[in-house]
Length: 233
Image 1 (tube, helix red, strand yellow):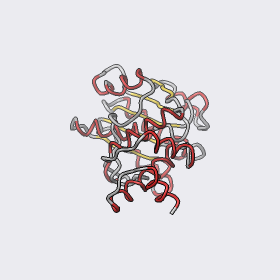
Image 2 (image 1 turned 90 degrees about the horizontal axis):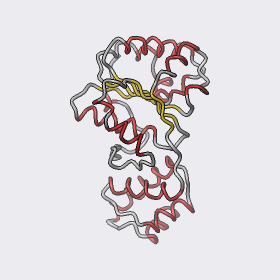
Image 3 (image 1 turned 90 degrees about the vertical axis):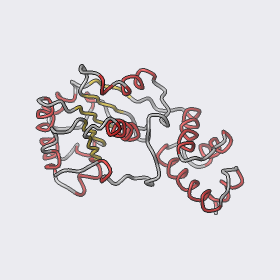
């Protein structure tokens, strides 16, 4: 089975863009590693872990986009969605790719057939030039995966923990995301969203999507009164 990045349904509006330029990096070392990932012959496997909402999927989308811009063959697989709709055979015959991005590793914690498929996929990738990036909520040493051989393979990655953002950093991340949509989001409005609605970045992105649609429909700027009116009806 073959899929392209554009065939994977995203959880947010298709207008959303996930680039390195609009990701708030609190770790300069991680930013440098990701930017030079394709130029290095020394690193073929990255493992990124963090709590939900820290930006793992954003980084995988950005890596996929960068690979496509370099005319590389790339596939993004969100396991949390795929285990509900397809079979582990989707991991077969991916060695022809230049980059494979696997999101939501935790989704296969209790699925032995998926773990076996990923283990064999990993072994095949080692014989090819395909680079692999995996995102998870836990580091390899703490994973709930039952297949010991797979856990040992995961431990061979270059492992990065994506730091959770504090409120000031979430505010800057919101502003960057708004700019990517062509919106101006003031510090006051960003603080208002954090204090009165959510501190979860996924929920904040949904709110920003809602505000984007309202701003376009009403041809209004994202002033604090307008944002309050939209979100409180």
